[in-house]
Image 1 (tube, rainbow, N blue to C red):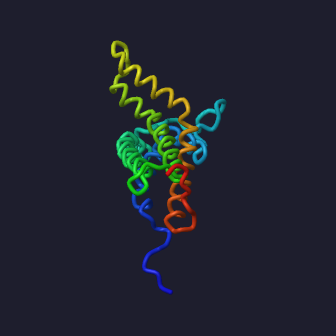
Image 2: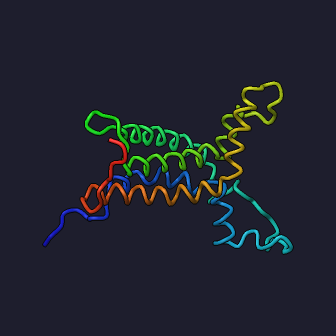
Image 3: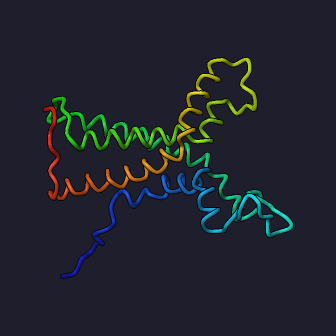
Amino acid sequence: MVRTQAAWVTGAMLILWAPGGFRVTCYYYRGAYYKAFWADPPSCTVGEPRKTYLGEGSFPLILQNVHRYFLYLALVFLAILARDVWDAFWFDGRFGIGVGTLVLLTNLVLLTSYTLGCHSFRHVVGGFRDRLAGVPARKRVYDCVSCLNQRHMLFAWCSLFSVAFSDLYVRMCSMGIWTDWRIVS
């Protein structure tokens, strides 16, 4: 039997570069893979093995600075996912809740918490300022985002697994392998 299309290629694979770029350039993940792949920093008590450090001001690490642009794309994806969740609440024109609705809603909440807790998002809501004195509304929003930022690592990992499970759930239901049970119909 000859196949014309690979079975593993899905629509999600075509857009993976945008959320993938956001995660790869995330400050939390940077710290994790700098240590894992480059042993940098090697330890708190061990000196650096080089005389000069150029940081993210030279190639290839300067590419990390595209994170804020991936943030804007991630916000667009959150809006699209929010629309998907809204659509999941409606069955044949009537309000309802299924297991898939809860799976997609949980995914959206975790991704939103991860994205809005991002260091770059704090900079955006802070108004690109170094000081927030004299701007109380902006300070309140910044403090709210900072609250999410305190659990950024938790949201990063939980949202990563929720994306994988949500994709698996939708795929299995669309193939007829799993049934999306209705809780409220």
